[in-house]
Figure: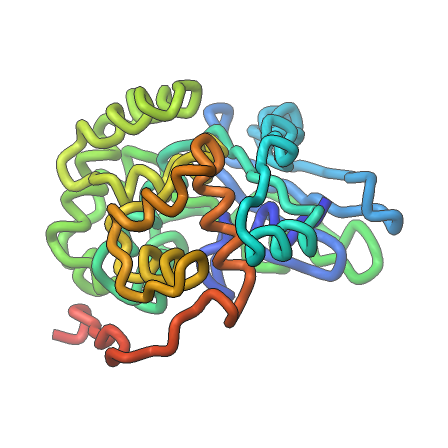
Length: 304
């Protein structure tokens, strides 16, 4: 088990107010159907035994679902690498499991914030909105173990509930750098949050259809969400600016690959295409084509 690889996709930037990594442990603040909760997960020295503590009204909920969060529903043995790069990446990361949170809205909202902007802009918006409209995470007073940090001392926050997201005024979206299209998508999703949460228990096609029934949620957003909420190993991200070129370059030397070419290259990994793409991204510089175009310009509509 590698906690960093498994739970890393839940972290939205180095200063995510809902996530902290401390030596040997991961802290996560979340809003469950039973209420807010803080979860601390740590590995024993052997690297094969997990210990966890939780606080808040949702503590039992997160502890009951801890195995799935750590990838118990995932089946790494189902992945059979057919390319040299994937074989090497797979062999170097035996502790990778695909997480499954069982929570749709908490994955969907930061993904919507990432639409058509740089990750730095999206992370900044997430931090500002969660700290402004969320609530301090429940947790212990003193640190529970040497070197650990209490949830409150770490400054963790639980994201707002659906009703609060739907009530964020336009000027605060603007101050956070979120344009009207993205904020409107989040508001629409928040208003049907109960229906969207049902997608966490659905198979990929039905879950995808449920999410994409909300205007503003397309294939890219639904895949990025379901990778986390459902832990689906086949939820491949399409419509991404960079991923097709990275996959094409890594597997066929084709830096100009589009979605169709990427899907063709990953066809041998049907059922495991998200895992294949994740392993390609984890393989580092060997999979990244040399840059030919300038980076996406950064902007901040909150300054306008």
